[in-house]
Amino acid sequence: MLVSLQYIYQKVMGKSLLLHYVMEDAEDAQFNAVMDVFGDCHVEYLMCFWHMLKKLYEQGKHMTPAKLLMVAADVYDMHYATSDSQLHTQKTMAIRRWMPDPDVAEFGKCFYRQWLTGLFFEIAVFSNTTSFCFNE
Figure 1 (cartoon, one colour):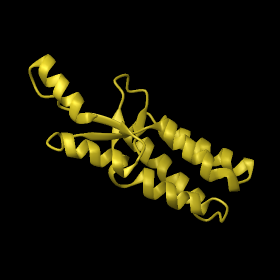
Figure 2 (cartoon, one colour; figure 1 turned 135 degrees about the vertical axis):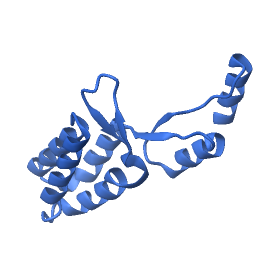
Figure 3 (cartoon, rainbow, N blue to C red; figure 1 turned 180 degrees about the horizontal axis):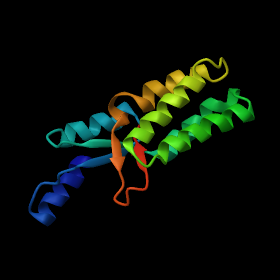
């Protein structure tokens, strides 16, 4: 599908399609497809906040409602951080809160691995600069 998109864009616009941002849900297949077709572009991967919240509630089923609320509040605080330093402060505070708690630690490890480090922790500043979005 991406090959077709690139082909049509080339025919209609008369130039190559260059991607700068891609919003994904942290699936290897999606990442590989983009790299196969647009590997020559410098692409910044943005996490889909909806997918991340969906995973939070799927993996949070074993938590008490109060602990799930705490984790969700931490995730929202990170998402709506107004600066890079605030985002990193929120991230550090959340991880310190989650890891000692046996009911939350497993989720915290998974969240840290998938959403807070590596490929999908690129920071995207929205044009209105009211929030930062970290990507899966």
